[in-house]
Amino acid sequence: MSSFIPGFILSLSLILAIGAQNAFVLRQGLRREHVFWVCLTCGISDAVLIAAGVAGFGALAKAVPWFETAMRYGGSAFLIVYGWQNALSAWRGGSMLMAEGTGASSLRKTLLTLLALTFLNPHVYLDTLVLIGSISAQYDDRLAFGAGAVLASITFFFVLGYGARLVQPVFAQPLSWRVLDALIAVTMWAIAAKLLFV
Image 1: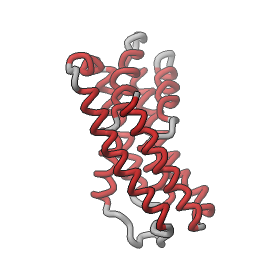
Image 2 (image 1 turned 90 degrees about the vertical axis):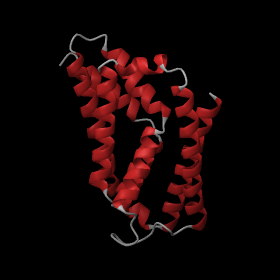
Image 3 (image 1 turned 180 degrees about the vertical axis):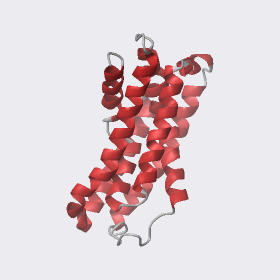
Image 4 (image 1 turned 135 degrees about the vertical axis):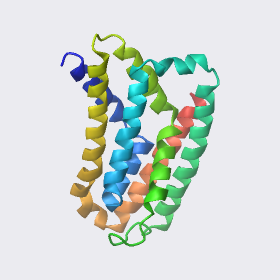
């Protein structure tokens, strides 16, 4: 437990920051679309990256100098486009106010968007491969540290995805969806700007 708990706390503190992936999971939870598969995909993605980091894959960024730059620009481009789509939804209004099961995106399209938001974000590599990977080296039981980090990630995504239903009444109002879409767009663009100009 002396390695498990620090891994859990570190992972949770990193993942709590509002980002593209979290905003997407929240939105899917509010719409009640493919929530289980979205949460599971996020959890598995993080688990793979954390495991790679703990296993010593954090040296990738040093071994391949162009990797960070490629991920930064590719991720920024995707976030700008995704933010633009949310901005259009906020401007038009009402586009997300559909009955459950009506007009939902396909599971394939939803998961492809989610995977792009996850793996085109350079911060996910810095957080999982580099940061968690390097900190895990300080612990005797790296496996327990990694298990704690993975459990924190999976727990967070399922709580976020299914917990979104608690605020469902708020999002019965068209204005709430427009505000959420606008906030997501601003978040995407802020992350993109940070990646481009940092």
